[in-house]
Image 1 (tube, rainbow, N blue to C red):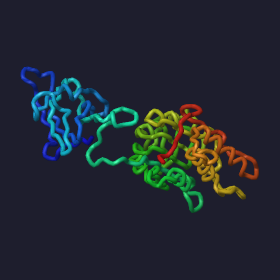
Image 2: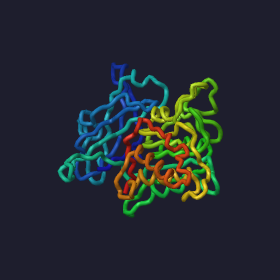
Image 3: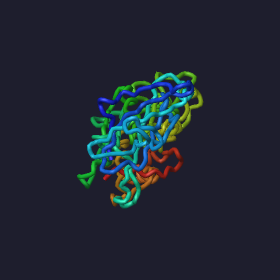
Image 4: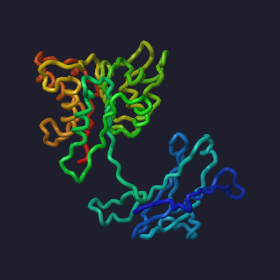
Length: 346
């Protein structure tokens, strides 16, 4: 089933019902395209802060096109409806833009293996690949420290019919680019110089505003789609108490990330002689994402973020001639010992 808003009927009318100044009436116009009627539908109202403040069942709303409550009927060419939505005035007291979201379910449960109805799609809607981004501010040598392996493991896909993550390494991207992309990043991976409660882009970015706040702070931005946020820098798992900048991992979780990883101590990022990958930060990135995406032995058995971090430490110790973990054993996650499994679409 598909739903759309006909171009000629996009305008939403508003009026007040007779002898009732406590409600507003909105006319919402849409079209349903399918060989079967919708099984059910809802209309949700969001305030300027994108909080849902009201919802209603379409089946009980009057349709001005068909007369009566018939807002669920569909046909293959598109059945146009105009339903009247009654909203209490008190729910729309906050200044700004309010949004109505139409949510319908098809009636094809008998044709699906799980016998459950599915949500209707927008006409011409396409499924977007999840976005994975690397923001590297080290620039060790000629390569971005972790960009190569972030892209290799998240994009690599044995089944060519199913695309993986849309990966991109942005090097030392401008601050506004990083924060504009952040709400759409499913994997947000940063590498650079840092300390307790802050990391660096073009300038210091604190976890949250403190007594001497820098130009920007992580808490002002959203990680609404983020499954995993990685802060590959020194002491990114520690809390700053001197300036009140807080903790990067805690703030990442508070703004939407499902899992955040950082380090409690200093980590080496520079070249070490005789190591296979030459650059430690790149070596850790390779082994971490290889285990996370493909299994420790590339057996397609997904492992947790915590298991992948442990595996990367083991490989660094094994590969370095000095048998040193170079600070990478100090990793920490939020939530602690995270069980998140990050498997790219394949």
